[in-house]
Image 1 (cartoon, rainbow, N blue to C red):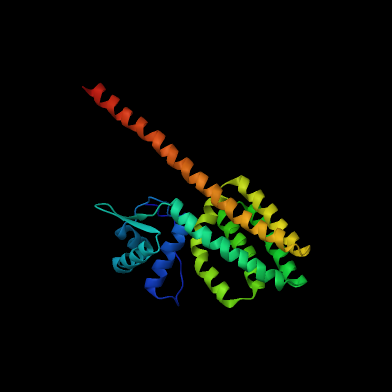
Image 2: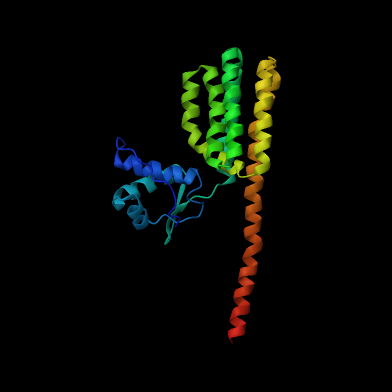
Length: 246
């Protein structure tokens, strides 16, 4: 198990919530990798707590789909599935389109300036090379649009969804080619607002989200193919090894 994940410290947060938040963020940020086992004793020692809050946090993470319970093996970080990715991004694109429509109607010069500032910070995050900073800055860019929409219920729903989206943002941003593409797409979205081109903006938003879905899906399929290709080789090597010992 990876012992390098960051422990959240907050003296005002209840212990159970602190443990849950720490493990959740470690999974979303990729500090705990898909397939990695979650050993209660090791986690408890690292975080300086008993096994009880660890066990409770794992149960909650299982309900969120971030952890899978494997018979005779225990808990491990859930793999990113195609179904889960599609479910999240189908909801996201619908909400993003609605947010853009409302933002377009409420657009002001000050709001556009905020969006440009958020895009500048995203570009700076890319220069830093930190995927966590990039994902956070990309999220901030979109939340400016949500604020421009001025719909509290929509903002609440998107805020509840953001943790699920964060994991896919991280995966997408691992691809260096995707980073320059995101900058260009952000700039085009800003331009559509400046030029008051509503239809163009809606098209850009849909392409922006669907492009991320396609990219991550392709990455998942490629990883699956690589696993299938490597499996027979491992099997044949073990057979050769047994023969040589006979």
